[in-house]
Length: 169
Image 1 (cartoon, rainbow, N blue to C red):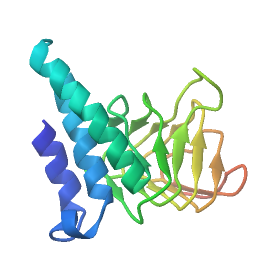
Image 2: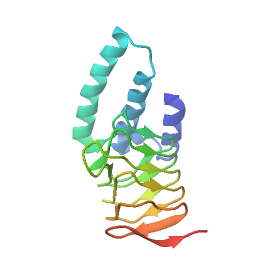
Image 3: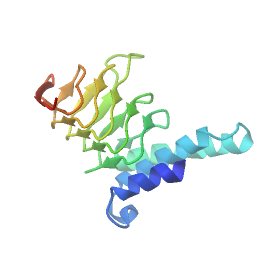
Image 4: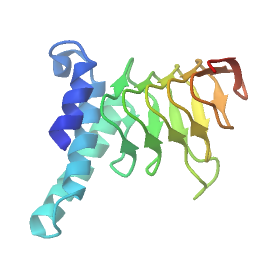
């Protein structure tokens, strides 16, 4: 499964992305962490997890992207303009989604509910999606928007707090 999902991620990147875009490092590490979690318990899994966490902190520090393996992210993730991207462990992101720099996807308070984001969602620079919100499929969230309530499929939302300015019915 790691290769299938990562192959879909790579399809959304230019050729030789490891040399051109640091965001692919974080995505590859995320996919590897999910793969480790799927393996049987034992010494090798324990060793791989220790190496994973060391690599996670290193990549997080170098790229400014935090994609913990506890998040559920569909294939085809694309991150433009790496840096200051935080996805809370336990968040759900659908397939073929796009994140830009400064995006936060997380809870509003400790141990609070987390966002569920549909497929083909584009999230603009420095947008924040917080709390137990549901984001439909084919949604566009404008730069610097703060999403605190559900957004229906096909909508475009902008503002603080984000409001739907266009909806396909």
